[in-house]
Image (tube, rainbow over all chains, first blue to last red; front, side, top):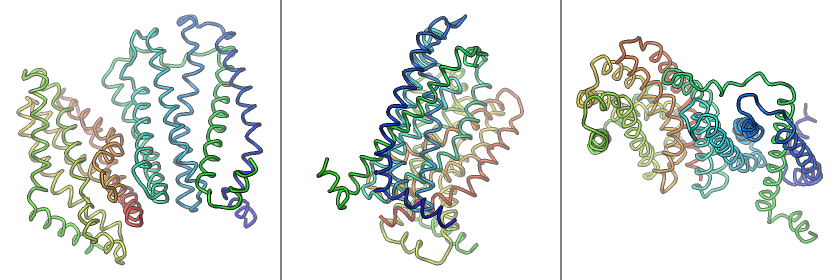
Length: 248
Length: 223
């Protein structure tokens, strides 16, 4: 157990993370490029058209992974906050800080592509559907974390405050989703059956799965890059950062 | 442990009654916001009775939100918050006492005032009963969640708008349950399920929100 802990703390030290992530980063970039290209080409060009939606359904390959990742990025952010609060690890705070704008962009991408998809299929850019509404609330939760961070001048306090806010949001997300779904089913007739996932043939869902993996990989890559920049900025007084900047 | 809770409630009530604007401003705000809707949309009874549940709930939400911003402000500014933090009394109970005090001067009077406004918005009597019950259970939840935002932003100079951004998304479930219950009441259906859900949210809020608020206060005071 002691060994595990010392490894944990070693990995959590900014310097060690910077070194390791520097070695891993090229691999991640390569994997992201490869997987995303495969998924995009397969999904957009080779997957069979939908029998109802024709080619319009292909935006699914952009939209669905973004939605999946938007939610799980909030979870990752809140978990990073919890780790930072419990074990007082600086790196976790940087992870939280950098995950917030990434998650917000993914949520925005999900809503925007959903609107673009909705126009030809539902005939309208926006409906107050349960999923759309809870995505919108998720975007607000991300915006809250970002706003709180930018309002607080003391960096350490800002990190802890954001962690608490993220955890409060994490507890609330299931409640919000449940209430929004309840609100929707009681308020509106279920006229949009198309939001339910059709039983897809493998030629359709395999590229979707590849895209989901690609999105996760892209998220990890971007997250790592952002954390690296933050580390350099935060540790700019230390010797190892100076040495590194000088040799670069 | 109970003493500190009641002592905090008593202290906050005393302060509020000596400073009567604390007591009247949320109510006046609530009244004025509700008045704006008939002026802005339509004075017709059909339109207004349809809008009434949402309008009253949103106005109650905003009134709570704007008043909760000052929950810890004066304590922070005059240094008594630090005294509270370093005292051996459990912070959880102090926070709970402050939240209850806040509810007694905003949420509770607001609930009492609502029937008048509901009649002015032509809400049927069944709907008014549902509205009163949901407000009675729901406004403490609003105070509890609002206190989290107040604790996190108490050290900031311009907390007002920020607290809305942090807290309003978290108010969504209460708003939905409240308006659905009123709608069910208007339609003559049972709204017991909504009340039970809201009650469970209240219990959860009572247990968890003061913890988050206390943690937020410690952070705000340390920076």
